[in-house]
View 1: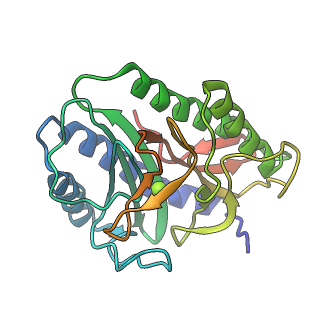
View 2: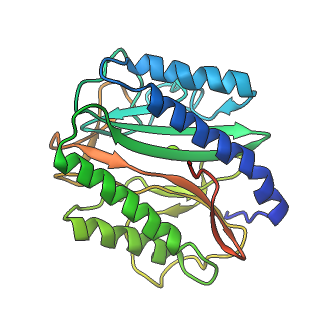
Length: 255
Ligand code: MG
């Protein structure tokens, strides 16, 4: 069921969005060559504790997860593209680091992800990060009253194709509210003009993620981390967006 939020509820979601943005900024600022992924998780964990926020990940145990997640951020490195379980790994020069983070503040969730290079970038890695950011902006631009959900999906898929990437349809965006995942599902490709008619008060996470060489993934033996089937690298960009009468409001916008 798709739940719509009142303007007052959307206002009440702003602190969660700001908090999630601040954690992604802090985690990114803490990531250098040699930084351990467990240290990055600790940075986010300390901020959650200090803010009195609640992690959406630590007890998360859906049907596709091997066990409760146990950490507060997802750290997906290189060919790990989604749901990367933080583990004892020191970031290497040139790694693509994707951080996904969701937390609840005052009972409202925000969810956001960012990809960046640590150290010396490869051109193709910068390009795929850029593609996910351009696709996210294109998707957000379609998140307006009167459009269909398919307009968001098609805009994302078109950007992927323009960069020469294919789109995995297993995981995409989703409704956000009191819980991290709700209706509707927001696929990263689709047909313009089709699907749910976007209404004021819809709050969704839009999250394009692409891989350089494939649209297929497999689950790592840790039971969580999703890796590209061909070992190629991936990137991921996500914001939580509220559709208001004045247009899309990016709740997790970073400075
Ligand atoms: Mg997320």
